[in-house]
Amino acid sequence: MSAAELIANLERLKDEFHSAIDPLADEQAIRAAQAQFLGKKGKVSDVMKELSKLPPADRPAVGAAVNTVKQFIENMVTRRLEALVATAAKADLGRSFDVTLPARPVGGGHLHILTQVRREAV
Image (cartoon, rainbow, N blue to C red; front, side):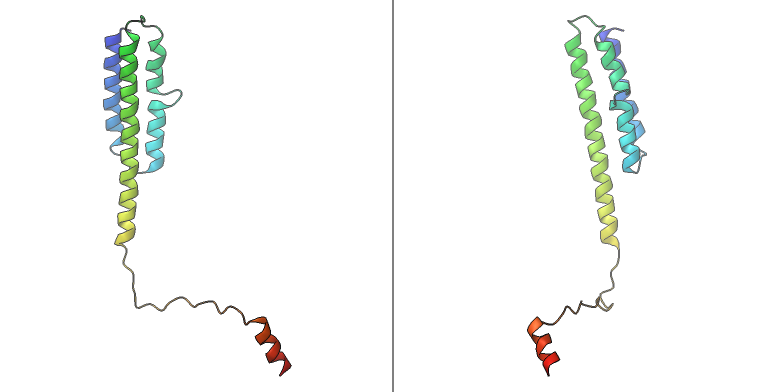
């Protein structure tokens, strides 16, 4: 593969990740998508393996493109996870709370040891 083909492949992977992560609504699915692209056997790692077959003059350009795609994927994952946390916090704040309910009973504790002795003595 040539450098231009690898860079085009990386752009395609970037678009593919963007479309794959949009419908996901839970953290596990987002992390699984991240692993599918950035993991040890991920799609970006496959492109990195092809990097060694390129001539030394083309490697910096493809390496920079790989790093750009990795940063894009990590930023997308971070944004999606932050959005999930914000949505959960908003839903948590949206719950109603009835302030007229009685309070929980307060624990009684125990009497001071000297008070206990006085009461036993009398």
